[in-house]
Length: 442
Image 1 (cartoon, rainbow, N blue to C red):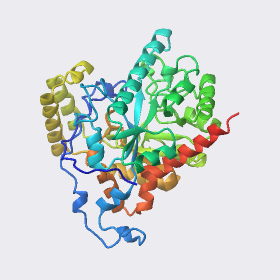
Image 2 (cartoon, rainbow, N blue to C red; image 1 turned 180 degrees about the vertical axis):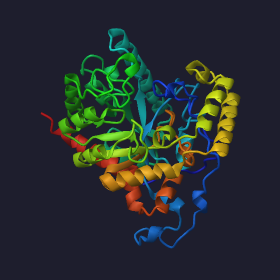
Image 3 (cartoon, rainbow, N blue to C red; image 1 turned 90 degrees about the vertical axis):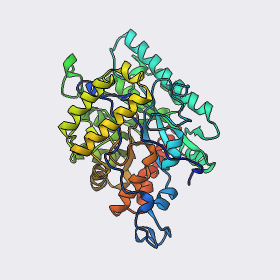
Image 4 (cartoon, rainbow, N blue to C red; image 1 turned 180 degrees about the horizontal axis):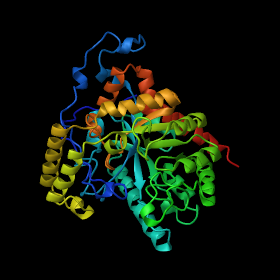
C-alpha cells in the first residue's frame, strides 16, 4: 500500500526548532537541529538479494523496494508556529523535519500530527491559555489539510487510513499531547473526538489535573513520587474509551500509567518513548511497563530522540549551547525569528561537532526496538520520530530519511512482515480495538 512519490527532488536536512522542549535543563538547551555527521549508507546502495531476508513471499531485490512496499506511520510529529501559513507551509520545502515533500521523498506514508500544549498553572487563566494554544495547533493542522487536499487527507479510523493511502495520498491523523487544555473537567473530550483526535496523552512535563508525569516539576514543589491517576484522571480514561480516543501513556509517570492500563477498556499506546533498560531516562519505559502494555494489547513506540535514548557526548552538548547562544537561537523568540542563513550556520556547526565528538545514531534506536520486541513481543512495538519536537538521530534526521529505519531493521534480521507490523500494523490494530470499545460503550 503505497503513495505516489514521483517527481520529488532531493531535499536538504532540516532543523528542529524545539517546539516541545522539555522543562528544566533540556528547555535551556540549544534547539535540536539535526544533521548527521556522516550520511548513512544509502538504502539504494544496499546489497541486493534474490528475495528479501530469505522470505520467499517477498520477491524483491533491495531494502529500498521493501521499504516502498511497507506502509509507514510515524506516531508523533509536532508542528511549529504559523503552521499551514506562508510562515510555515508544509506543502513546500521547509526548515521543518517533516513536510509533504520530505514525507514523499522518504517514503513516510502517514503521521500523527500533534496538538501539543506545555504544562502551565492549574488555574482558570492557565486553562484558558492552554485551550487557545491547543486551538491554534488544531487550526494549523486544518490549514495544512485544506491547502493540499489532493496530497494529504485526515483519517479518523483505521479503515480510513487504508482508504486514503490506497487513493495515493498521504495520511494525516491527529494526536493530543497533554490533556491539560481540557481544563478542570472532561466536557471537551467529545469535541476533540469529533475533530479527529485519535490519541491523547494524560500528561507532559509536570503533573497536571489528571495524574503524574514521568518528569514532575520538583522545582515547583511537585512530589518526585508519582501520585497516580487523580479521580478526574480516572474519569478521563473512561471518557477517552467511550469516544474512541487511544489513551497515550508517553510522558506519564509509572503509577499513573499502570492505573490507566488497569482502568482502560481498550488497548493503550505509548506514542513516543524508549526502553529504560537500554538507556536510563525517566521518559523511557522499564520492562514492567513494557509488559503491562503487552498484556493490555497495546503498543509502545520507540522514539528517535537522541537525549532520551542514548548518551550525548558532553562536548557536543556544550558546543551546541554555545553555538545556539552565538547565533541567537537560545530563546524561543530567537528560534522563531531565525533566518535560513542562521539555520544553515547552526546546522553546519552542529554537524561538525557531531563529526568530531560522536553521535547517537539509528543503530541506537534499533537497540531500543530490539529490547522492546524481546520483552513485549513484536506485536506490541512501534516506531516514532518526535520530529519537530526534539527528535532525530544520526541517519534519521528528518522524514526524507525514513527508509534508513527500514534498512537498519532488515540488517538486524527482521522480516518485511515484522517491519510493517512495527511501522503501522500494530497501531492500526490498536485503533480498531479502540473503535470497537467505543462502539460498545454504554
